[in-house]
Length: 448
Image (cartoon, one colour):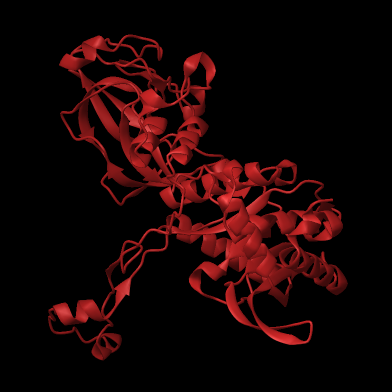
């Protein structure tokens, strides 16, 4: 009997540690190559690790809720053949059913990172569909029948976009709402009780039992994963970039009329449309007219410089059950209305699932935070590190508004923006917010 350990791989750029969230297998289970072994949480998202071996699980070496470093063993596999060597991903796994042979592309003695291994191959089901395990899980979560999906990937492989398109056609995104979360969004542990006063004087305290009532009075939330990273980023931004916030109240009635027309249009029948789409287009349009808000302050050996980006990687702040994420849409300035709407749909769904890949959370140039979904009128958002501006969109509600000398009910919102005053001067940030507001007041300006 021989064993082979599977070490925690680097599933992102520079990942150093991850938390074991949920084991999908148990000791004694027989697994095939690419079967999901465990769900882990990195500093940015949830990731499912596929099995590099076909064989029998020997032992789970790390418990759920434990944070481990990259390269540490997390699970072992057993084999009766002491000299069984890892095979390539294409190696047949038929013998693994009996647990006597261990095959796979797993980490040999010299392997140090997942990057040195071949990537997992797509799996072909009994009905002939080719798709990777994460794509199959996505299809299951969305209720999509893979056999009915038109594949566009290499060699007939079903891609993520194929599944998302099929889900859209089945109106999965129509009228989608933020899911209900529990009263406790993150893992909590009982708070430690205060030490008795006599302890400070060296007097041993009498034994004390913690009652259920005491435990319910307070709770402690461990700071880790997404929460730990976002907290560090917020402190870095708040204490390194001088924030200035400006805002403007806007008559967004014509924006709401446009959203209503787009929802009724056959061209947008399979696409979720919301005011956020118009705000995103407005920000991209206003960036072109005010490029400094899309710049960044960069420290160099010679001092500092301002890097002005001639592209827009549009970040969308997303509140998820695991904390704040800010994934971004790469080269958003190249997308038309429909493609931008699809990109927003994909970004939102992926963030809610906690499946946003690390690459989608790096390289942002300017961010939108939609605090209106929480019923807030305005706010002073903190700039995402590496950027010079962030736009906050408030709730859109009917209010009395003066139009041509008459008071009328109109859909009104507030657009606010925080900026790095080292990069953007007062006139620049004011012109930018005014430009965003002008688009919300008259979306026809986008047609130029």
